Length: 71
Image (cartoon, rainbow, N blue to C red; front, side):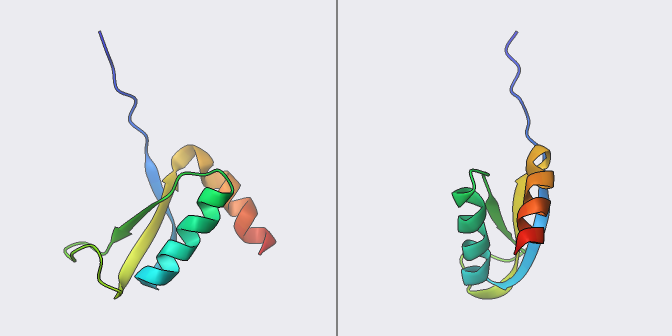
């Protein structure tokens, strides 16, 4: 039996523009942590002025907390 591992993602930052969300994503990925950007529910992806969430895997949330504390 083949089971896919489902990775839980948690929001670590909320931004008001796509550019800022992408900057946070790049910072986290530069630290070796996968990140995703999700637009506010119901909005199409790619709008510059909109609310976005930056998500990371749940098991990496503590690492993000340490990174944000150092900034």
